[in-house]
Structure formats: C-alpha cells, structure tokens
Image (cartoon, rainbow, N blue to C red; front, side, top):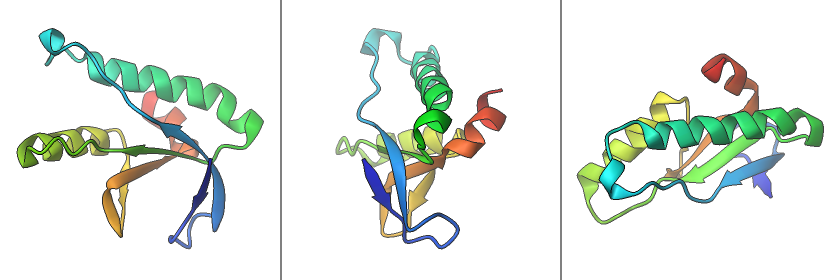
Length: 104
C-alpha cells in the first residue's frame, strides 16, 4: 500500500502497513485484549517494517453509528500515538519509527 501524505514532515509518498481490523469477542470487552492485539500487530509490523521500507501504519477507526463509542475508539488509538489525518479524522496513522519507543 502507498500512502500519499499531506504532511510535509513525512515523505510525499510512503510505503505503509494497513491494519484492516482488530476485533475481540464482546464477552471479553474491557479486559485489555483489544490493546494487546494492537500491540502484537505493531510489534509484527516493527519487526519487518525496516526491512521492507514501511514508514507508517494506517488504520481506520470504525464508525459504528454510536458517536460516543467511535470517540472512545479514537481515544484508544490516540493513546498509542496514532494521529488523525487532517481531512479525514477517522483515518489515522502512526510512524513506524515511533513504535519501538511506544511499545519498548
């Protein structure tokens, strides 16, 4: 996937990893499993990202029709360092260079 950046601090086009979907069974909500899955995914991207030139991770915050839930999901991802794209706030990105400092 190629990401075209409107941000001058990133290359105009950058190889990107796209996280399509992270999910867990509703019975296990609130147990931190969603965050664990995200961290595992980021670790896997970090382990290969430098080898294949990935510079950013992209994902879409699901708009489930419930504004409060969507805001909570966006805040969850923001807590991991993801930033919204200015023109599309539910499309968010994280620089691969920040993953190691984020997840140690």
